Image 1: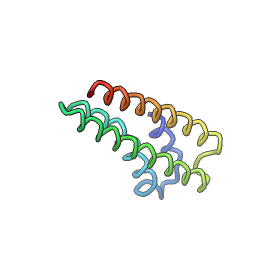
Image 2: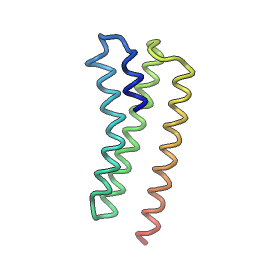
Image 3: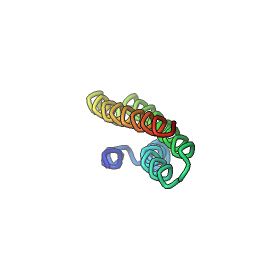
Image 4: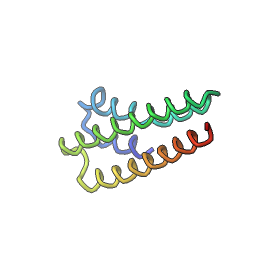
Length: 103
């Protein structure tokens, strides 16, 4: 995972702070998508997609903080933001598809 590799370069004092929070938020995206699709209810699936999207936004803000602290470069932040935007769009498409099939 990109975030886990990135975190390895953070200062040791961030191990239990920003690094830990960033790792949890980024993995939460995948876990919530998986949990949502383990549910039978469309509403449950949609709710977990919303939680995954929220975790993406949390990840994005934590990456901005890492850039502000000088732990990652502006270029790295821009690349990661593009990846996050791509995932947000995919989640929106999935949400739209679920809602259309629910009618």
